[in-house]
Length: 108
Image (cartoon, rainbow, N blue to C red; front, side, top):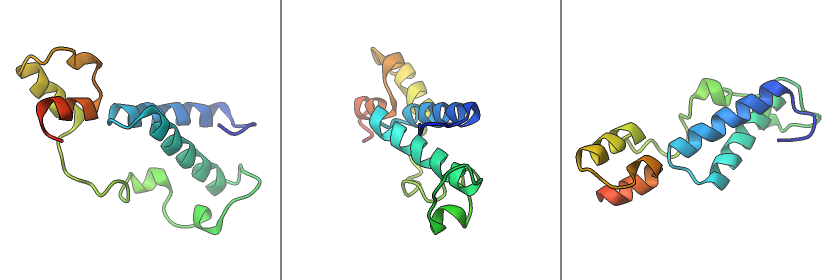
């Protein structure tokens, strides 16, 4: 997080990062997604010293709800993959992320 960020933005960053990890993103990619989202929110609300025109206009990331992210493959969710792994008695499923579950179940 950038220096001088509020505790609200810190919580927002952690929440977004954790959600991305749960969806199967790597830790590095999750941090990038969270930082970009929070920085855009900061720019839109006037909290940052500089911001691009594209950061200030259009729907915010929270309003957009990920509409433009990753093409919306329509594939199974983490919970669906986990339940299938549970039915198949996949060893180590509780510590797997979405990508690992897909690989183990032969779905990706």
